[in-house]
Image (cartoon, rainbow, N blue to C red; front, side, top):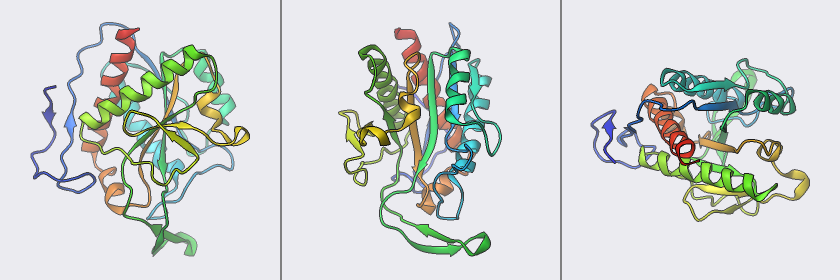
Length: 253
């Protein structure tokens, strides 16, 4: 696949500053593509993890969701953002809004806080910020609960996202710290929810009308990877990968 390089940099491994990303070519839309983007967490009492600079997951995912929505709309996608404020509605209300919107695809953006961590700095209010420079990369998660038809669509969507993200230059996470929480799919960077039934991720299985996956975009405890996600180039490449994956799924239906 030909790619338009966003930067001409020395070869390096993500998330090194020297690692280059690619903007995947996405043709003009030949059909309507409707996608719902969920900024993970941000529900009452649910801010998610805290990163290496004491950044809240809910704040990070809101920034990422806004950046993705803006870029997809510029390409002609019809986009629903399930959360546009620091604290939004509960997931049940978000699912209801998604089903009213009738998208073909749903992606929920999250960040991971993986492995053993060590104190790095002190944040607001004296909070300790922790870091871990190992285990960077994205992961794509879905549920195998529900009718076979929706499980198949989730897995196709998740695997295609992983393929396109890797093509754009993003690194997939190994899954080493997931343990028994997720089973590892044959596609690199993809995992299936395997928690005890009452602990499984509600949002992944909340609707059988449209395929939902989660992208853990990066390791929130890794200062180098966090810095890469402060860069517009990263958001450009990420949006191109999501757009390319979405088109492949919609055009093959």
